[in-house]
Image (tube, rainbow, N blue to C red; front, side):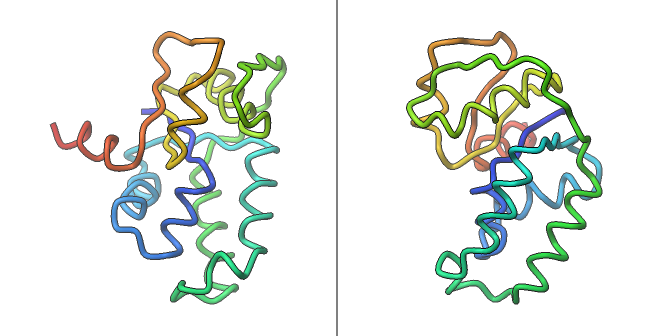
Length: 140
């Protein structure tokens, strides 16, 4: 299954979320095929640099960086040639939809359902789910 993993799921992994961790672990085991693009990579790197977010994390800055590098090694780099502009409430999230469409993803995994589901432009075959929903889908 081709997916896009929002940066907030990676944050969840760093903070010890078991289900978010299972999403990333499934990518590392090549059971899921994550996409990565320039805007999403920049978001990951920006968030990893915000120490206040990770005050409760057991991982050091170096360990977070190493985890990101390992995850990136499993990602399929995807170029976005066309900006769809689905008009999400947070324009900064449009790149997730564009990446998913460009790479043929069937799921965007995020903790931000409210903003990502309220788009004006719809794409058949693309669902926005939280890690728990993906986990349930994969168990059945």
